[in-house]
Amino acid sequence: SNLNINDVLGNYSLTLVDALDTLAIMGNSSEFQKAVKLVINTVSFDKDSTVQVFEATIRVLGSLLSAHRIITDSKQPFGDMTIKDYDNELLHMAHDLAVRLLPAFENTKTGIPYPRVNLKTGVPPDSNNETCTAGAGSLLVEFGILSRLLGDSTFEWVARRAVKALWNLRSNDTGLLGNVVNIQTGHWVGKQSGLGAGLDSFYEYLLKSYILFGEKEDLEMFNAAYKSIQNYLRRGREACNEGEGDPPLYVNVNMFSGQLMNTWIDSLQAFFPGLQVLIGDVEDAICLHAFYYAIWKRYGALPERYNWQLQAPDVFFYPLRPELVESTYLLYQATRNPFYLHVGMDILQSLEKHTKVKCGYATLHHVIDKSKEDRMESFFLSETCKYLYLLFDEENPVHKSGTRYMFTTEGHIISVDEHLRESPWKEFFSEEGGQDQVGKSGHRPRPHEIKVINSSSNCNRVPDERRYSLPLKSVYMRQIDQMVGLI
Ligand code: DMJ
Image 1: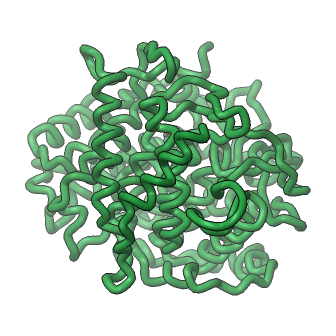
Image 2: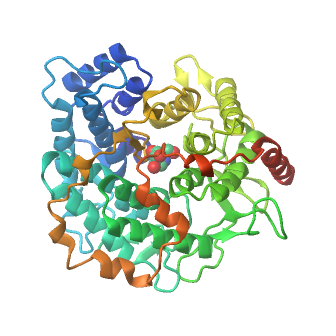
């Protein structure tokens, strides 16, 4: 009955599955091969287990697809990650899991999926009709990859229909979406719009779906969403380090009025600078990242919620989340400024000092007294450790030219290639969505938005001549010190 734990864990060896490509990225072929064989031989989805569709998709489906691609990659950039007599077992498992998730997309009047399914029996009879936007609208990367690998449009079709249904429910005035919606009526139950919990990966997957599949409408939705975010969520002064007013911050507002709803930010929002790197808004990314790092410096972790008005945490736990280190890594790739290595080292040392325990790393129950919980989320290995490792491993194959990788929202690598850009089922959407719906705001891409057209990877670097040579350490240390002083 403990949904908070059980619908994530799923009783399917979650951590083992979620960590597969981390082993490959670390070049540990023997452990990768051992783990893959364990998954093939022991993991089954045929169980009476109720799981969250979103968590199962990003943590399990995404990991299986990523490991499958690593095993079958003819170039084997990470060393020999092949599996003897491999017969696409991981792809079959991914397919099996996705089929078990499909009932979530049935009997919903809007096309927006139910949040939970039982892997054996489908949507539970007492199921909740409310879902968060991120949970329902960030399935397209994994479902799209699966469809394109199998040549079966079903999965991409249902995931895309959900994105479009949510998109069409956005406010006409602000262009913003809320954080919780009723899947039958399409009414917004949660009218809060922000960058964090409930919405974060929705934005991320609009852009990443475009990077991966090249569908223009995904980019158009992302650009329109980004514009609304800038118009309504960004507060404070225009420039990071100069001018009047407070340092810039992205706040939580009412999706219809744009009015401030509360005065906290959450630790999930720290992914946003990383997303800004992908679209080339590096200046703003540097600034926002500095704000989260200032909070990290103060507590040696990011509290789940931080109240910027009271200058104190509102919610005190830190479950080893990756968002700040993810942005740190992407900013280092974009700027090559050693400041980000210092940040990474600082994060690493805090983790070692405050969270390391005998059998792993523990969730901080309270960022001030540093008490712990007996829980290590699977994303610690699939994301936090992976991004930290990649930050310092300059020679990693992920960074070598030739193969271009994108990270899913759970940190799983997916190579970006032409094969995934073929879309034989495009006609399904030509009437109900497409350009007309998406382009409704009449928004024309701004320069930084156009840049993404040539971008194809999380590791995409700002072209040489545009590389930042700002003396980041001093400029931003001043900013960070100022912020630490403020908070
Ligand atoms: C991860 O499961 C994913 O990054 C997801 O998109 C949101 N949050 C957790 C980690 O904090």
